[in-house]
Length: 166
Image 1: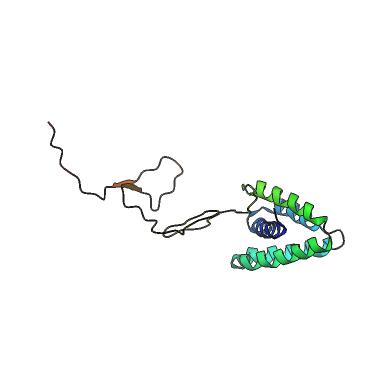
Image 2 (image 1 turned 180 degrees about the vertical axis):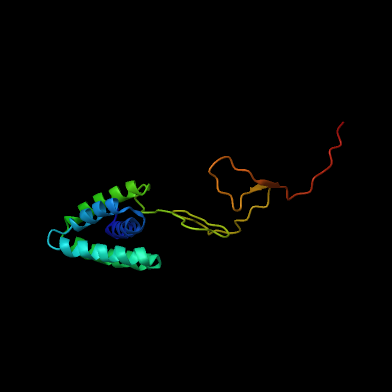
């Protein structure tokens, strides 16, 4: 994983851990991240806790926090190149905890919340994404919450021909 990809992945996973983990899990993540800096671990720890507090009250700041921590982690790795290996270990641990695999390309696709329309998640798309609508038969699952067998409505969008065989 390149340094840029490592920093992007680490900052994203770190901010996700701030917003979705319980207090006990967060404390472990915070200690591991603060331990990356032997000289400034108390400052890093305090800044992590400050950012988490902001995100718990204002989740819309997550993207800004990712950018902020990308910069802070870059400075940390530049000041202490040994911190890069610790950061890689932290990324692996966070990805495992959050149910994601760390790919070499650093791609992680997640949809949170409701989606209206078509969502395309991919690593690389060649040629663009055109009309993604489906015109054939399908099961309408709008509003479904699939905790058990899915029950839907079948819609046949093409003309039915009468059966002539006897």
